[in-house]
Length: 262
Image 1 (cartoon, rainbow, N blue to C red):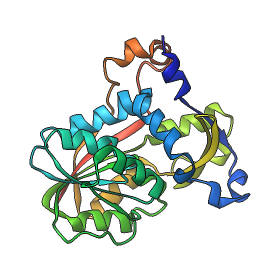
Image 2 (tube, rainbow, N blue to C red):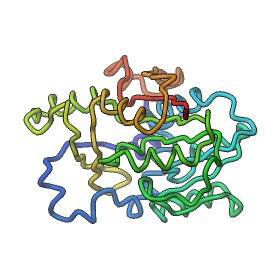
Image 3 (cartoon, rainbow, N blue to C red):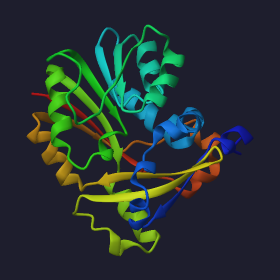
């Protein structure tokens, strides 16, 4: 059974029509407004704590001594886990609210900066051995500027480890909601969900692109794919979230990549 704490911190989602976003675009993806509620959910929920984050750490492997950039670091959960494993970590995020929580978690000495992925980043060329981009690229319509900057700050032979919404899952979400007319798998499409989290409701929009478009974007930026992963959740999830696992025995929520900078 799911504990009352996990139920309280769960995120429920509902697909909404594109017209919902045009009412007040400033209210979309406003992580400052729900930073604490999102962080509490991210700490313990199935998809982040027992699926996405363990998969990212497994793909990263032995990071001891590696200079690592956490792109879109949020409140610092992945940053902390990498640092605990011996990585030398820097992080940035566009949300000052999320970074405030990250600094509380990581300490005043942590290298954290406010910056936008897709804009020039405040790091010299060839600074990092690894970049981790956890569930962040899919917030961008155009990947080219972001990938160019990540390639710039990576040393030759460095790694980009990234997770994004699985395009098959996004296609299925629209079909199950009877909204397939609003979505074409082969297009780069903006889609929006309403999150209910910690007593708050907010709109979150992301961009879905087909797998071939992702591959082309990575190659165009000078990356070579070494791993494409569709992992299982952490084994502990089966005991903690038995109903969810039974309903979705093979997870395809996210798609994971390990890429090498040529």
